[in-house]
Length: 370
Image 1 (cartoon, helix red, strand yellow):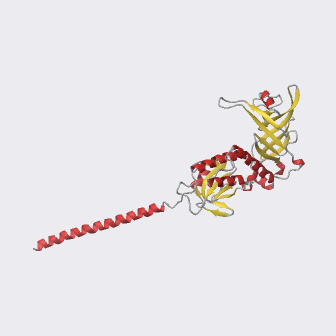
Image 2: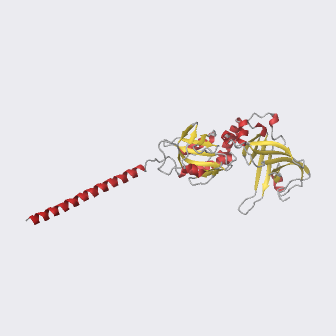
Image 3: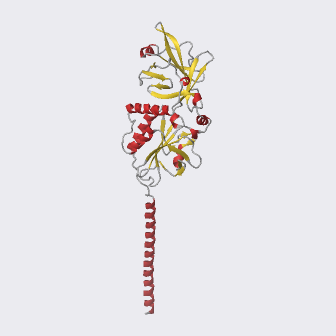
């Protein structure tokens, strides 16, 4: 009897032990599942912005038109784009989630967030564009409540922060805000791009130094519409006529106008930029020309135009020479470039002359193959 009771108790103990193990395992599984749920929940804290591929494409088209208007060219920068800007690999800004300093306040931003991973509380950089002259960086930011800003930086990022300010270009700021709101930007088409170009030129003139009679760059002999003719360089291209127009303090190539002032009108801040302090760069002057006059060793008199903030390179040279065209003396505009004033093209006062004399190079012009 005792043997039977002992056996019974042993069996009962094993059953109870098994039940206890199952309870422990269940408790462990429940705890593990709870951790997974919490972890999953922690990863879905972002928000979806009012920004999508359609708006991104509209902004890309807008920036192409804007670049043409400003006589510049811009490249879109993605999260992994290794574009260089003032010695900085722009991919490192995005990867490192570099903070920005706006109006003296350092702010964390979310760089190029994926869909559903944008920040609820801080600005999100939804697009980045850099100009091909390595001078200007634009950040387009959007908050969760729809506030859109176009920010510009003209000074390389330091180890801790990227200094930015809101762009002073109202066309750019307004265009981005319109696109972010689901509307069309002002210069989405070529016709409105021309209007924007006129507005941009007007803004630049308002910010310009006051030009007196002694500050005229292009005298009355230049102030015409000039034509040159380009033959097609391949079967895929068409022959075309190009135009240059001058006023006393501007030049326009195929309708794109840029102000031109004597280089002596550069301010102390402008000179500081040329010495390497890009933090003092004035965005509104980015498409200005700085002019000077010179006479080369051959006695040829030129007007030389370089970028307002151009530190290297020789710019573009212009001179007017009286030539015999169809038995009559007429002015011809020569355009040259490079350290040796290499001949680029001749411009004439009529399209017919431009086409007729398109292949001529005069003896006193310094051709590349000389």
